[in-house]
Length: 138
Image (cartoon, rainbow, N blue to C red; front, side, top):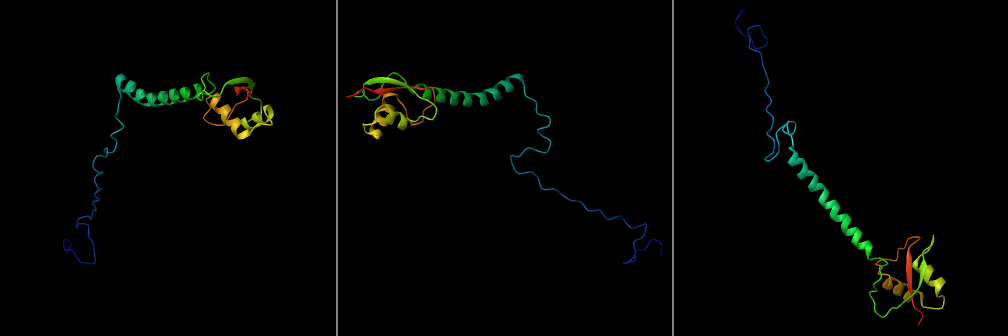
C-alpha cells in the first residue's frame, strides 16, 4: 500500500501539484518589459530630441515677440486718426481713465477706440510706464 494512492491521502510518492500562470502578452506595438532599460541615444539622437523640443518653444516666443512689437508702434491703422499728445501710463491707469482724464467732454468709448487704433493695440490692457499717443484734438 505504500505506492497506492487513496483519494483522501497524499503520500510522499504522489507527484506535487503545481499551478502555471500564463501572463497575457503585451498589446501589439507596446514595448516588452524592460525594453527601455537598454535604450541609449547617440549624440545625433540627443541633438534631434533637443531640436524637437526647442523648435516649438522658439516659434512660440517669436510669435509672442512679433505680436507685442506692434503694440504702440508708430504706424496708425486708421489714417484718419492724427497723433497728438503723448501720455505715460501710471499705476492703476486704464485706457478708460486716461481718456476721461485727458478729454472729459469727449465720448469716452470713441476716444478709447481711437487711442487703441492710433497705438495699434489689440486689447485695452496697458502697463505702467507704457507711452500712448492720444489723437489730436479736432
